[in-house]
Image (cartoon, rainbow, N blue to C red; front, top):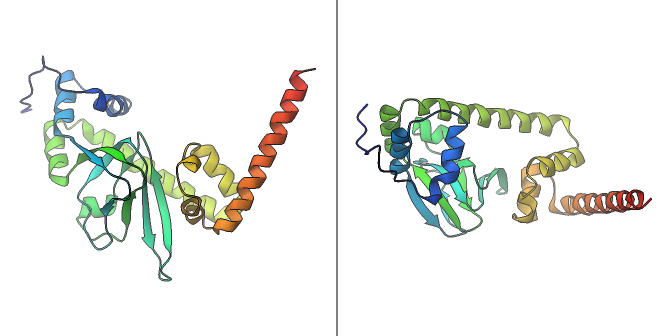
Length: 220
C-alpha cells in the first residue's frame, strides 16, 4: 500500500464524523487508511436549487450528504417530472449506472436545500480503491442496498394502494415530508398532489384521534 499520510497526524475534521461512522458500519479501517479516505474526499457547499446532474450528461460523482436534501428525477414522455429518490443526511447520491459505466444519464439531480457534500470523482474513487481495497466492500454494500430499495419500491408500486404507499413512505422517511414540497412526494408515490393532500389530512386526523385516545386512557 502506498499511503503517504502520516499515521500519527489525523486530518479528519468534524465534517467527516458522520461519514467515518458510516464507513465503520461496513468495514474496519486503520487510522492511516481512514485518514487517506478523508483526504481524498472533496468537500463542497452547494446552494439550494443547484443542478448537480442534467439528463444527457455523464454523472462524474458519488456524493455523501453531510447536510441538506437532494432530489433525483427524470422527465417522462409527457413532459412531467417523476421523482425517483430523495437523499438527506447520511445518504449517498449519484446515477450509479452512468457513473460506473460512463454512459449518458437520463436523470436530473437537484439540491432542494443548501447542501454540504463529500464527493468522489470516478478518478479519485479508483485511486481510493487501489490504496484502500477494503473499501470495495463498503461500495458493494451501497449498491446492494440501493438495489434492495429499488426492488422494494417496485413491489410496493405494484401491490400497494395509494394509502399504503403513503403510510410506508412516512414510516420509512419520517423527516422528508416536512422538508420537501408535497408535489415532489406525490410524484414519487405516483399520485396527484390533490390526492396526496387528502391522504395527509386523513393521516393527521387519525393520528390526532389516536393521541386523544391515548391521553384519555392515561388519565384513567
